[in-house]
Length: 107
Picture 1 (cartoon, rainbow, N blue to C red):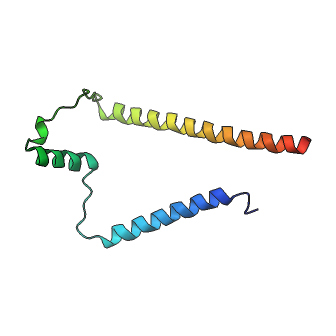
Picture 2 (spheres, rainbow, N blue to C red):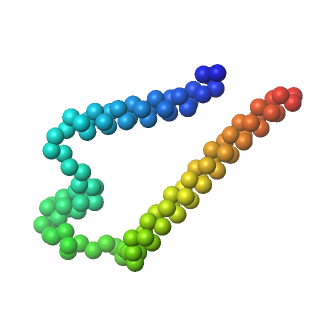
Picture 3 (cartoon, one colour):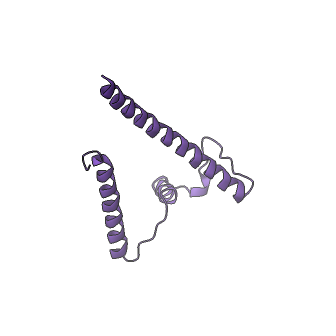
């Protein structure tokens, strides 16, 4: 039985290990604050170039949604599309595996 679920068991162990390491490191660090990669990168570029952060403009203009509700709706739509894609890939893999096992039984 465990042989059939080897990959799943390894994935669960890896996730639990990652959570344990994250919780341990976050509990032992004092005075640490999450600043986000955009802020840190922009600040470092501004420091190295000698220009203010506000003087940089993006190459592609950024569209901002008119409200927070639309922004969260677009985020949920993006997550749903990603979930459908991942579910389709896993379903295809399981269908192939089942098709191969059925073909072996029929022979």
